[in-house]
Figure 1: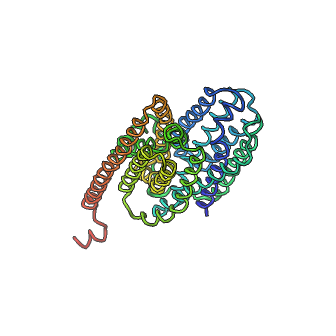
Figure 2 (figure 1 turned 90 degrees about the horizontal axis):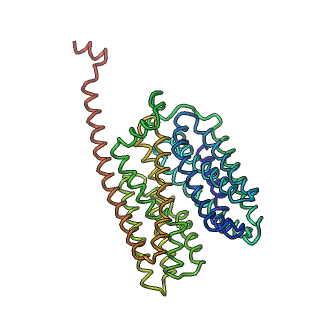
Figure 3 (figure 1 turned 180 degrees about the horizontal axis):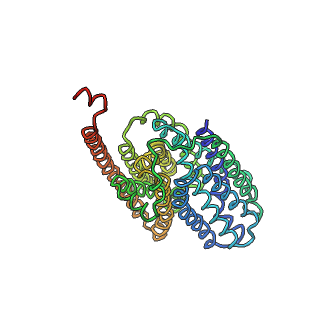
Length: 427
């Protein structure tokens, strides 16, 4: 029941985010007349807030009750986005976006830690998959509803979106609080740690995290897969479609809708089929799917008559990979985290992903702005292949880790003293 409430809370929170995400740039730049620089800076500050929040919130989730961390973060996001209703100047809008990004992202590591605590090791992939699907549905519904009500020709045309987003995050906070009432305070045995481990300084904690070879390769895969799709989802791919493929704007909306529909339709099936599959092998498949998607996008440039269809198809192909990526990455990262540093590790990896996701649109803008569409495609093909290679090396690292753990267990069994009764019998 707790995980169901957590999934519902995640969906409602992202429903609020969906009402704002597609429209905030045009609102700041055109509706309020603050210009493209202010609008771009708002997105940047949102990402900076996210970057600051992720490792900070992860650390707090290790040291304190993650329910409280998630609730406070959600309420902070609600305050940040609701404050945009009263933002009458660009600086006030920028501040609100920073607080919004901080609160929204801070809730992520805490929510992941709650999934790990409230779901058994056999159910974690499934819960993360359902959580991801619910978030995709929430964002899609929020964007659709806001599209019917937002009026970018008026200064108050986004009041509904800002209020709805604030209400969504506030309701999400309440649901998480309710889910946490009476929850057992003890950590699952596979995540438990001593007091000294949770009190490590930040630098020492990061050293402990990246001393794990498998986590280093997980970081490579995380960065490559983030750059290979998520960093371009909102800006790079639409810009490529409009400026290079010359497709109609409606094709972009259709592509996003197809992406969401494929995730919803396939997520449960994919989780069942891949439940016992090696996580690293699944990430290799995701990298392969990313590669295929960029090949199809390249073909679209050669076939103008079907460019729109190929662009929409690409988003559907990406979605198949997402159904494997989302349920696998967080449980894998958590399983590799040093004891007592699960939240810190998840927060650190969220910060890494956020950083490179923020850099991606800048790279896309530079390449497409200089007319280097082929360079844009080639770069992302290479990045996707790097993801495949990184997942392959991760699989080898995981095998070596399991071998070492079995050897240590065998050594411990040999060195273990005989039980008293057995010792007496032997005597």
